[in-house]
Amino acid sequence: MALNGIQIFKMTPKKNCKECGCPTCMAFSMKVAQGAMDISACPHMSQDALDALSEATAPPMKTIKIGVGENEYTLGGETVLFRHEKTFVSKTRYAVALYTDMSDEEVEAKLAEIPKVDYERIGERMHVELVYVNCGEGADAAKYTALVEKAAGLNRTLVLGCSDPEIAKAALAVCKDSKPVLNGANASNYEAMSAVATEAGVVLGVSGKDLNELYDTVAALEKAGNKNLVLDVTGETVKETFANAVLVRRAAIQDEDRTFGYPSIVNLVKIAKGDKFMQASLASLFTAKYGSIVVMEEMTYAEALALYGLRQNVFTDPQKPMKVEPGIYPINGADENSLVLTTVDFALTYFVVSGELERSGVPCNLTISDAGGLSVLTSWAAGKFSGSTIASFIQEQVEPKVKCRKLVIPGKVAVLKGDIEAKLPGWEVIVGPREAVQLVKFLKDMKA
Image 1 (cartoon, helix red, strand yellow):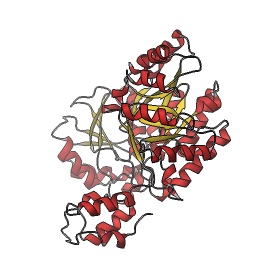
Image 2: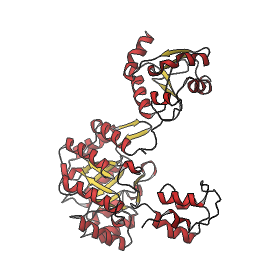
Image 3: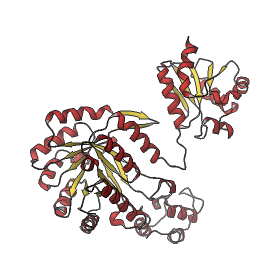
Image 4: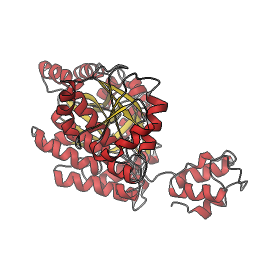
């Protein structure tokens, strides 16, 4: 059961040293109780107190790490059922599936398609992070291991869908250093599969014919000492799978039942095989409710643009605006003589404006000043995007680096033109269009 602030405070050293960043031990205790700080942030907490508090203050869902290096991902660690309550912690990861019953040509074609989806949106790389390698019926260790080796060549974190302990052991021998997920434990083989996963030091995926069997299998694995788990909640139908995902998360978060306090896998290939449109729709559903790993047959730009945009919004802290770093962003090969434009640091504004500037093909320097992560009109109304703030930013950050003295401001704040000109002698201030979509014609007309 989670402890409240008073209970945590009783176990603190009560020094009020402020070394944790809080003014008092009571303030620190309250933040720990709310999940805003970790108990280890107190440098004077005794080891006995740390041991006693760590389990009680840990998130109701265990945090699991998979992969290594740049391909390391965190799953789980969630503390709320709904994003508006606080924030979701570990974003959904998407996997593309390979199967042993695919022909060599189909495998090669799939492996060639996966790297094609790789782009950046608002400072975040969007690409297929995982590859799910499934061992079909009748496949032997040599065939499955060969497929695993091919998939490993993509430098993606793998999920091995295999329920045969001997085949799984052979496959892990060629990829265990990359810390894949071994998804194949069930009520009939969990002891052997747990031994294989533990020996290789990888996460074990667990499934069951229903939630009762899944619960009992997880409890047995925990009793045996294995808590490095993910739960495969995929059922026989969409309805059953959705119910499983929701009930598992609710049991962990709301009922504080830590037996179900693990990340989840949803295999859309199993419940919607061959229907890419249904899979894309279900992927969006399980991004919000509550898939930690979602497996699909393919991921093209058509799916990626929608899914990654949705994921980025769902897993953004609703209490903090999405911002980009203030600075100068050269576009279309701009240099120090290229036209200067300015706008706010609200990420969506930056994304839309920079996209239109790139589409224009005109070299230009987009300057972003600190406007509190607000939109153009909101930041102007709040005094964060004013003649003074813009002029100050231009003088301090832009003038030393850019020779061009033409500045385009958003049309929605045309009223700032005179004030900026007065504060920036030598600069020509140009009022741009009101909408970003009009920038292409505006820049081409200027160039002409």
